[in-house]
Each structure stands twice: as structure tokens, then as C-alpha cells.
Amino acid sequence: MSIDLCIMPAHTEDLTKYIDMARALGLCGLAMPGISCQDEAEVNGVTVYSRRSLNGKSARAIKDQVARHCSKYTIISMPLCSASPVVWASPDSRVDMISVTGTEPDCTLCKTVARHAASSGTVLEVSLSPLISQSGLERSRTIKTLRESVRTAVASDMQVVLSSYATTPLEMRSPSAMVYAGRLLGLDESYLKHAVREVSGKVVARARMRRSQKVVYPGVEIMEA
Image (tube, rainbow, N blue to C red; front, side):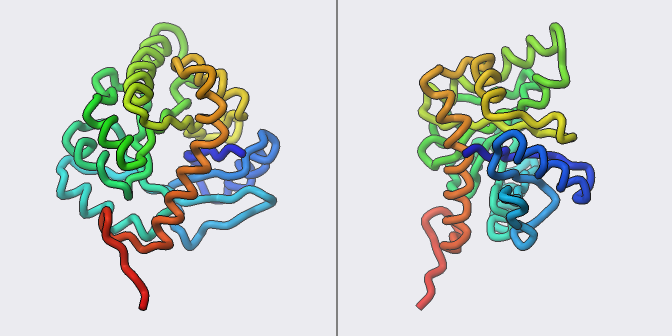
């Protein structure tokens, strides 16, 4: 079943409404910022996961954040907004997703980052929020920008996942609606169901396994005697 890897509730008190909507839409899980692994729980059949977005203008800042956060949050994401940190983060298997919104025309996925990400298992996360909130020419430009990143990812065998980035429960989308959005973004019909129904679960499973194995650096684990 599908997991929405990013919801953006204004208050944690609103989470119950998101969970109710997730059940109605056929989602089995949600991920959100603002909570840590200790706060994760299953509520009425919907599991809530923690996520953390990295930010920083230097490779050193990103390295420090990855080391600090990878044991505290299930999902680690890197916004596609500045070339240097993304280039560094893409080969790091502790970074689960590179996230793109399409609202910045200059921020598209490049081939080098896509190749590194594909080899490390990092996926491209596409935010559907602009497709819901925008209209007209602005929306067309965003779709064009997102399609460029998606096309580069697919050509490099980098997996793609769609997330709602919903700021209200009504902005959440069902798996079938996400399939339609995937068509707008140029995803191949044969890949769409996999992208919507399987990739999100694999991202979570991989992240939880990494945390349970106490990975402190790519290829380095803490072993118990």
C-alpha cells in the first residue's frame, strides 16, 4: 500500500484529521517533520513516520547534519535547491530522498546527481503541492520543470516517488490521483503504479533497516558483540 512521505500539518494536534483522511484514501502511512523516531506510532491502521530535511550551503554543513539526524529520524531528505550540497549528498546512502518542488526553474536534477543517487539508493521525491495550488501559466511552468527532473531521474535508473506536501487534509491525494499526477509529469504508464504503490514503502523499509543497523557513515556500521 501507499505511504504519503510528506504531510505538513500546522500543529501536531491536527494529525488525527490527516490520519482519518489517510484511511479514507487508502494510505497505510504518513511521514511528517516536527517529530522524531520516538514519536512514531500506528494509529487506526496508519503509521506515522518522522522525516527531516537537510539545509545548508556547504558540504561540511550537510555532512554534520546527516551524521546528527540519521539516528533520530526515519527519513532524511535533501531539497534540490543548491548544487554543491546536493552533489555531495546524492552518493550518501543515509540520504533517502532528494526533494524537488518545481517552483524554482533553475533547480532541476542534473545527470551527475541522478547517477550518484541511483547507485546509493536515494530516490527523487516530487512534491504535488504546486500542482494543486497553482493554475494557468505558473502551473504549466512548474510541470515543465518537474518533468525535466523526472526525465533525468528515470534515464539514470533513479527511483521516483510522489508526495502531497499537504498543509491541510483536503490537499492529500489518493493513490489513483497520484497516478494521474504521475502522467502529467511524464512517468511511463508501466512504471506509474510501482512509483505510487511500492517506492514509498521501500523508502521507509530501507530507512528503518539503516537505523536498526546503526550506520554511522556509508559502509560503516556499529556492530554489537
